[in-house]
Length: 311
Image (tube, one colour):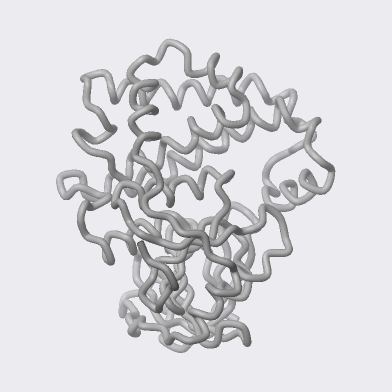
């Protein structure tokens, strides 16, 4: 177990209540990795993570020195680079498990619809306003009338998991846990944590899924040490980014190294980040930026699900 973090330590900024944090925590559990966890607030202000990212407020964020990795789909790639075994993506399945990220987003949206339809009247007003701002495409005022549709769609997604597990395999892609399980399990966990009665009803009659859930939960979260936010920022300030320039000459947006651009999520208002292009490939965009609390950092985003605009 690590004690004081160094420039090569894994530092995860997150909060446990988020199903997206649970994705990263499960990845670290699969790898039995040692890491530091920084508690991120559920609502702004989120000063520490915003200093690192330059404006992105979402969870989880992985920090390694002064390289900062946004979004669980990119964190999976980085963990496999840093800790190759066991891989999160068995070679036999290749990119298929990565493609599940969009299916998982739909599963989450239906689970969120169930939560809103049942629990929204009990949310504090400040929290509701923050989530309304975060999800501009969701009509919170229609949550109750949309509950039946959300429940139907959630059970339909869960039934696909049951179908995949019908042959007795322990995990979605075979004999061991991988990225497919990471994409799916947090959204059954989310409903069981928040609305156990709804989960019991919507996941009833799926014995293979229930057994799979127990196996996923048993994986755990790896070797975790809590870390104050200020200590994480100090690691970044004492480090230098290790990312080399890599720009695809056939980039469809014609991005160039050093060009100033803004990166924003295309589905939620998790925040905009402005910086200079260091990496632009079909799967990744990385920007160099500076902040007094962290010095120079490189912030990495997946290309899938993010919008890049010139500044």
